[in-house]
Image (tube, rainbow over all chains, first blue to last red; front, side):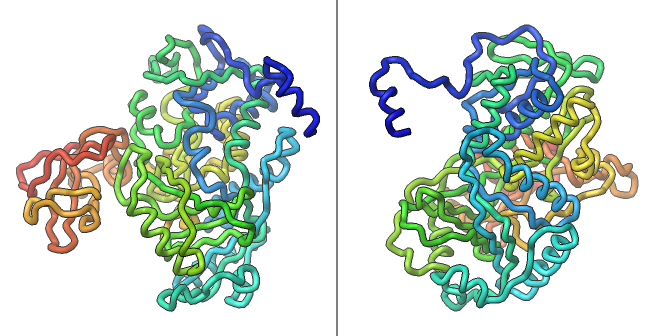
Length: 413
Length: 89
């Protein structure tokens, strides 16, 4: 391979095929228009083309591929959720993730690390036991472990967290993994592109035309396209899209911030989470500590970063690892999380014929990317919800049948 | 540091405040249908814009109303609640 790199130096033209074609102009009509070329939208396009032979599909993206929450999360994949609906759904996603690198012929750096969620209080520990029992019942590797087991897995950790919030135990989930998040979008994008799907970057949807309760097309800044089916997979932009079709939803937007430190030699091979300290941390394959915290405390449609966030996160991280006090923060950023009242997504058909939602992905969307693609493509192709997403319909709020997913990230218990 | 103008205490840092949710009118629970009540309990105007919201000054216990641009995070106006105010939702 290193010799092969010489071709790049010798040739004036790029000697390898590009990952994606750049289609010139929008066609007049498509069978399906997907709004948002993040992991979810591209996965949906990929499975529509691969599994259902629907290739007359346009994916419209106002920015660039994977530039939204797909490239802004902390890349954790796990399935140890609290509700049976959630566990079943996320476990299918973990199963799909495991084969994805081979599926794409693209290295996603999918790396199983083991995932510890700390309990600092009796009540947190009892929620962990509840989660572990639900998980085991559903066939997921998940158990409550004691302090010694945690210390063995991570000798550098101060289990007493400076003395003020001692770790009492943890929920341990062996299949918990990290993956290279933008490669997931690229892999799905390339696979969809090779099968004939058009990905239009820098193309913004400005309106959705609905006639007689049915979608007839989308208005974009590059002109109007006819289509009977529109999938919205736009995470933090969901309320702007649903407003176009006059749909009311419970989704509100709050920023979720994250940061990485400068690269360090490998020392942390597990993923550690403390909801009480508002920290989740893992070490990337580049050596950076990838860290996130809680949601910003109020609604905001912005990806600005704050000093408050790095200050409080660093403080809590130092409670766990005092020896990191000299380590610098390299980058910080934010994503716009589309939060729902029950911490579960909003997916499937809507009262508007031909308008499908893949939304409400708040702080838990990356890990669900493959299963969302699978289930949304099924839903669009058959105009009927896939059984895995039946509990997540928008109508659950009318019918008072919420999911109550307290196993979600960045959520206190 | 972000500064909010509390109608009682003047300019104070954001850390002293808590967000209390959008300013909304409650339908009469005795007469509202299940659908109307569900809409009130769960649904929100999620799109960005200038919104009227409840904010709370933690240190002094003052609840007040703020008009805030949720796209740019600018507080345009803050004032104490007056029962005659109209909700924006």
